[in-house]
Image (cartoon, rainbow, N blue to C red; front, side, top):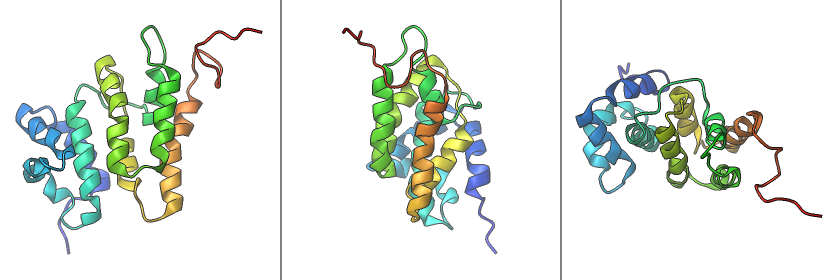
Length: 179
């Protein structure tokens, strides 16, 4: 019988607790860089030892949490958080955010993680909240062998984004329409 932790339950809480340590956060930031990821192993290997398919999601989630440590745990799923970045004065262009969420639909986890990093950085700068437990479920299932699971997880980013009210009707851009 294995005594390894159950990543789907324990990992996000552990990660949120330890990312406050400057030394650990420094190691975890390297987890998202294949050439440097080994520096994070002393903290992270236990989370995938009995389940090697979790290695990449564990590493990338650690990197995201460490690089964006000012994003608090909250109720915003990633898509909702992305929508909030388009609202208010100084918000990101909705077309750019939508484009990122659409583009990642066909990417594997590593390039999707890198592509969405700009949104996490913006959220970190604005101190938006994020449901890190839900983001872990998204990372964990992103490259699931079942295409149906992949589609459901990836499309949830878009459905959450479009379910959040915006300042303008969906499908309009910031350019004035003239007739």
